[in-house]
Length: 357
Image (cartoon, rainbow, N blue to C red; front, side, top):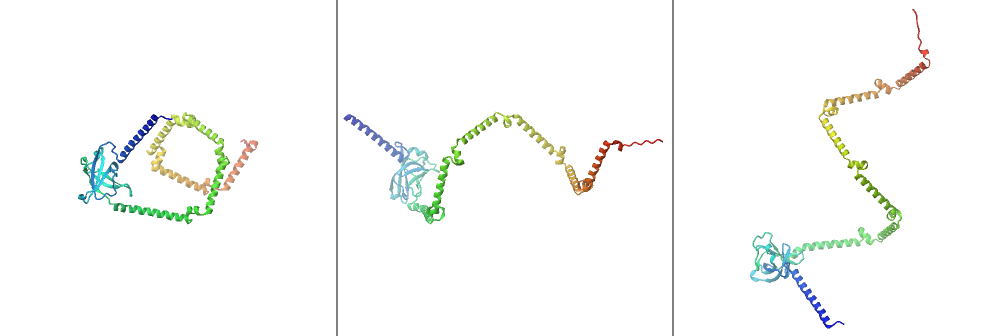
């Protein structure tokens, strides 16, 4: 059983922890209520608005969107009519470098239906830094009616969206459209259920290694072949980098590059010579007379071929006249027989007659 001294010490530790938690909580509250810090110096600024427009004590004070303090007091000052609402603000002193005596304050809303806050604008301000209790001019304060009026458009748009959603739900309930049929048609639901069953069967077969896809997933042979192919590709890439083989020499050997440069240079020189009209090709490309001669030669050749195809002339008769071909063939045959006979019996054909006078 613990002694009384141990109990008191435990209670003391608990009390110290509670006090530390309270101090931390107070510090967080101060940090949340203003961005200036708990122990930093603060200055007081005032502005007078026609109405509070939703601003209350504790509302943020921002400088072009950055929170620099809070509203600490609101009161009505009748002698300042029509701007009778006095808003007292407390901001961090180190924000004075961004504040000026000709800075303006306005009431803004965080969204259409959000809380109101005071926003200070120093965009065009050039005056000196304000002193504590200084008054900032007001650039405008919307009334509650203006806020409600500006929110009417948003409310109407929300109503339109709600109406469209209601129409969509009614359409779905009347079995119109694909989703409506899916929800209300039992036959379509059964088809979907059948498709799901078929998919389950297919996936089960694949997981058990059935079919081509199942074999692809289950069988290690494909993985082995894929690894072998990858190794072969790696070997080919290594050999290419080492300059082996035709492709390797194409990548690594400078001789081919030099030969290609030489061929390119010769081609450029040839094209330059042709453009200058040198040589037969150059004259053909640049000299109209040469081109005309070539055209005439082609025309004559075309006419000659036409005459031959028409059977005109010796060549045309030879190609088109069958009897001429037959006679020529017969003559060649007779000449062949004559030569053969002369070789076999030359005395028959070579007779020498001697006459004496």
